[in-house]
Amino acid sequence: MNDSDTFAFLTLFKEACLKCFVQPLTNPLTETESKHLSNKILDQTGLVIGAKSIKNYSAFVLGIGNDKEENPSIATLDTLARYVSNAPYTDELSRKNSESHYPYWFQYKEQLHRTLPKTDKKKTIMRPILLAGGAAIIILAMIFLLRWRKNTAKLFEDDFHATSAESLKSQGWLVQSIDTAYWSRRGESPGYLSLFTLRGDNWPDSLNRPGIKNLLLREISSKCFVTEVYLRDFVPTQNWQQAGILLLEDTGFAGKSLRLSLAYNDFYGGFPKSREIIVQAIISNISKSNNADKPEEIVHQLIFKIDSPNQELVNQNLQHSAFRIEKNDTKFRLLFANGSMANSAFREITIREIDIKPRFVGLFALKGFVDSAEQIPARFDFFRFTSKRCEQ
Image (cartoon, rainbow, N blue to C red; front, side, top):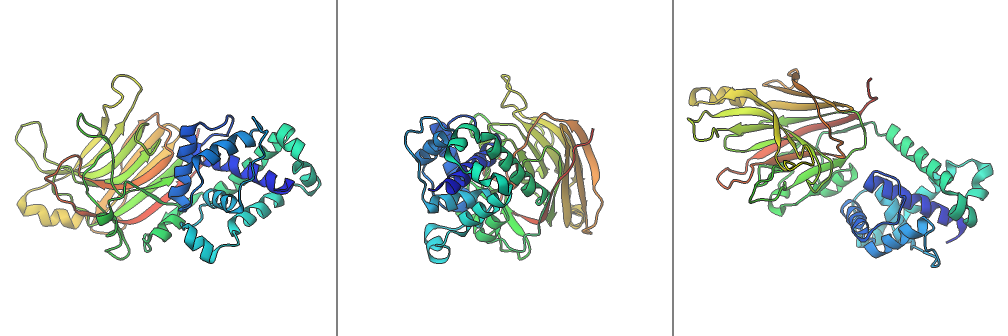
């Protein structure tokens, strides 16, 4: 690579690390971290950069043990550029057939150099300065690009009129723990994203590890935001069928999470049963104490008691339901709406201080770790995420 390409590669790699780990690259990546970044790139782009190469690149970028000159291929540079720019999902064959000119790398490099003052370009691309004193310029360029991208993506909306894998990928969605049979049915109701109440939960127990099948996720970085999701005709009828919105600190359920859902409940510890539909909010892994795996139910609000005469009325009033989460630093405001009309007003459920720093927002349907309940569809009609200025 020439000096110009080297500068662009250093900046691009640092930006990829910042996107993946939500913090600047200050030390060479470990093997585990390198594998994690490699998997994230594969999941988002459909293309492969080996973990060993990523580990070597991280040392080279930081100028540590750089006796060996790293020289990534244009294909690798294009893959990194695809990752940081949320390019549509593809594969090596498709790229070879239609994008063998590696447009994302050249677009990234051109955009990067346009952000630099003309009088400084020759200085910033000089190898000695890059390795010794160019870190500050690289960081400034990264900050500029990241701020530019955040400012152009403060509002995201999806009406799920397109649910193909390519369309979801291009919108920045990623799906975790795919159940192929049910994931293939996600578009069976035109105009909606259909997820099904499959066996799984992010609430662990003594026999089962946490996990949610066909969990649809978006990466977020805003400290303060508003997010909401609308459902159509979701009427749970068995324990613990539910659907809603999920905030996660990490995709492996090792960090803290907040789950807000519409759920069915008839479990009362052996006491006489009362069938009900509730709005439930659960915080998982609320501390690093001995009770780290014991969740806290912060909302258990009755929406309907169910009996035979009023089931049709329940169905009518759940034709439309919606959740909204408003986050202002550590203060969370949870809201819910339902009714026969799409424009039913949100009503406040609770306001709560919660020490959680979510990095992902997800849409889900599940039935807990039970086998008796059926797999019913939850049809997601609309999703919105809006970054906002934090209020004092």
